[in-house]
Length: 206
Image (tube, rainbow, N blue to C red; front, side, top):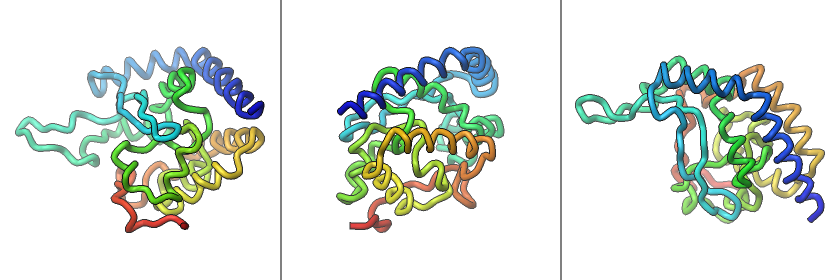
């Protein structure tokens, strides 16, 4: 219990420090997103958190509207602009998630929050990733980020759940800084964004 309280204290300290230090960057990015992509500046979406409970995640917008002038929907590859790609490659689009950490919806370190529609596609092993709060960064992010396949990602997420400690969180944070600077694993090979998880044609260990 004390360890989890310490994790929450660390989350709050890092989130407040990050928001204060990054305030000028947040303002500049908000203006750039408004200029390059229009409104809304902040992308909001429901994601599953601890125990699968939904919460609203905040990120900087990186895509243009999905709907074309003729009513058809653009694929993600067309919606993701060069500016949006740069935001994603530097992870700067994730900065507003510090507000999610302050609210207690997320932690600084934990499995990344995925889509709500994935929840009923997990097997029992994969669903264990929701035994902890989702994070801005995690064990899977420093071991391949979005370039790894779904079974490996779930395996890494559950490994984190089973092996969590404050020292592990500090190690992940240190390694995250190096990964962000190198811009490794931003997307899966041959794709503009992450491949969609369609269910357990992609099984994790049982």
